[in-house]
Each structure stands twice: as structure tokens, then as C-alpha cells.
Amino acid sequence: SFVSFRGTNSSARYSPNGAQVAMILSGEGTPEIYVSNAQGRQVARRTRSDATKSSPCFSPDGGRLVFAMEFGTNPQLYVMPAAGGSPQRLSTGFSYTAEPDWSRGNPKKIACTVKIPGHYQVAVYDFSKGSAEVVSKADFDGIEPSWLPDGRHIVYTARDRSSSVLSILDTETGQSRRISPPSLGQVMQASVWAP
Image (cartoon, rainbow, N blue to C red; front, side, top):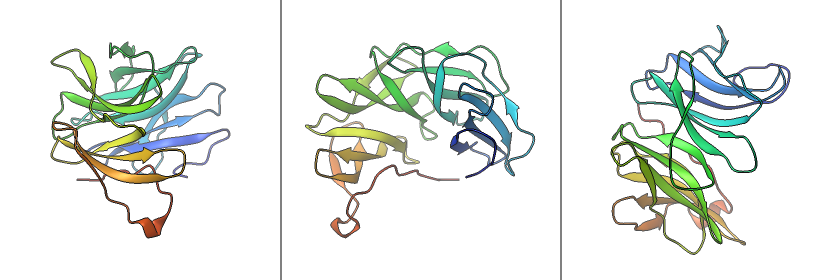
């Protein structure tokens, strides 16, 4: 783990310039978002509420954070200044929205996992439209999206009852292709690091 504090320590993500890390820590009770320097020091709490938070991700300029926050059973996406402040909910149009990843190639877009009848799919929230649209229209679950640097393609986990593989999705055409070789067996949750 990146830091060692009492409680759960999870979801550490570097800022685009590599100077800061956003993470979830639950040492004080409810899982909250904290930001530290790249060495895991100067840890500062950024959220304060009874809601469960997960998956913080910096904006391409490092000035904001997007994350999922859950007040009941369905998480929603929220954006707030990375230095702290009031979270603002993004109106995605879906009752369940989680696992956000902010595109560096197209700062107006955030990939996320949404729940639709029957399964989960990858969707893209577009700030210019003020809503999200499902981009992985498949008969299996599409989860854990991570943008490639081009702002068009996403690496994600394609999962059904018997398998879990990594795939690349073209968010403009909806075409998807498997990238993890069968010899790896079950794989999931890729992260793309593109300085």
C-alpha cells in the first residue's frame, strides 16, 4: 500500500504532474478522500461526510478531483477542487455511476461504470453535454475503465460469469477487442499511466 494508516487505505491515484496522490482512508471512521505529496507525506483530508467515497481521480490540470460517493445503495459521481471544497454532483442520467477516470486527452470527458438493466457498462460523461452515454454496448459487464492518452480509447475489464479479460474500447464506434492473452487467465482492473 502507498501509505500505512489505521483502517482501510485504498484507491491511490497520482495527479497528472506526479506531485500529489489522492486516496481513500478510513482511519477516522467513514472512508474519506485525502491528498498527499508524491512520497505519501503531508496527508490532508479533503472530504467530510457520512457517505462512502471511492475512486478519486485528478482532472488533467490537477485542479479538481472526480470520485464516486454513495449516500444509499447507488454511488454517483462528484467533482470538487483538489485543494478542498464542496463536492458538486454530476448529473449523469444513471442511478448507479462509479469508477470514474478523467480523460487527459479530452478534459471534457470522464469514463465511468454505470448500471443498466441486466449488467454494468462503460459510459462517458461529457461536460459539454452535461450527461453520460453508454459506450460499451455488450452482453457482458464492462467495468473499471481507464483512458488511453488519445482521449478516444479506453482499457476496461470485460466480465461475464466465466471470464474476466482486459479489452480496448473505441468510445466513438463502440468496437471492442480483447487485449489480455488467454494464457493469463482471469485479469481485471488495468490502469494506464501516460506521463
